[in-house]
Amino acid sequence: MQSDDRSFPREFRFGLSTSNFNGTHVVAVRGELDLHTVPELKRTLAELAELDSPYVIVDLTHAALVDSTSLGALLETARRLRATGGELVVSCRDRNIRKVFVITGVDQLIPMHASLDDAVRQALERRLDLPGPAPSTPAPEAPPA
Image (cartoon, rainbow, N blue to C red):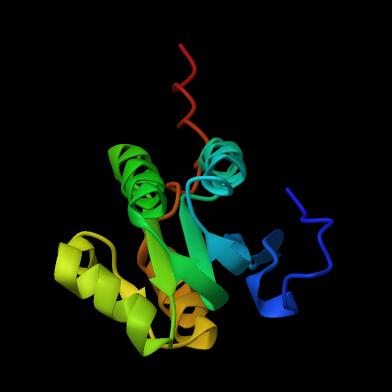
């Protein structure tokens, strides 16, 4: 949902972009994340939760506002990903937005990082720690009768 109203300063205009870093999906949020814009975030997160990567990072570096409906959407996605062995993390350096996570206790349920680089690094480390599929070995041949 891109705002066509150019009267809003750029930092308040809502926008989402998605990218993928080595199998980790990143959703970058710009502007206000509130009751009016959270449906787009929810759709995007639901789509990503269904894809191959169990790790999703929501980057709030350029977010101007995060309200309770946004927190609910993040918690819903975090629960969905955890149920399948994945994880949702948030990157945010804005003190006021981080304070909302702390006051509500959401920071205890969703890991937070001060930078996107830290969040991507942690996701990559966790992916490398996951046990991979067992190497396939041919079945032994039966001895001739």
